[in-house]
Length: 142
View 1 (tube, one colour):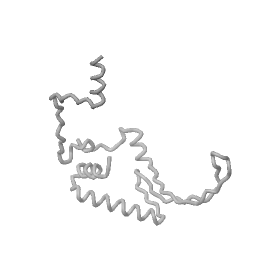
View 2 (cartoon, helix red, strand yellow):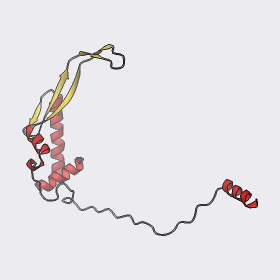
View 3 (tube, helix red, strand yellow):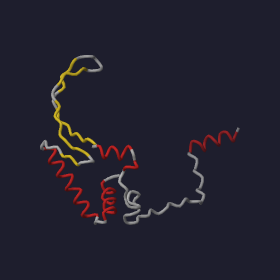
View 4 (cartoon, one colour):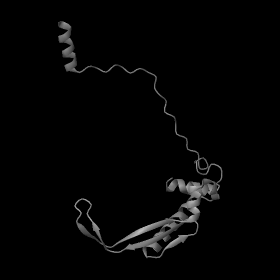
């Protein structure tokens, strides 16, 4: 499911317009990104926790040579699934029940792709190249 599919599914589930859902989703991602980039963790109870994690410098080992190397300090984004989300994923009976057709795409505007018809007409045989023709003539003469 990509962003467009998510917007359509949420709009179908809530009955809101897709434009308002899209702007709300953009606002959500902007706020979460800005807060986490400043170092403030964002937690949505029952869903996920977004945090910035700083890793200290440490000593490591080059697996090819066995030589000790220094690994510099770094910053990482960490997203942790919380209990409610994990329970729903591992046990689908605990997942929220959505309206009919929300996830299969039938709730949104109907888009039907035209089925490509297979041509039953015969194509003309491919022409032989000059070399093949010359070779065929030589074998026919013998």
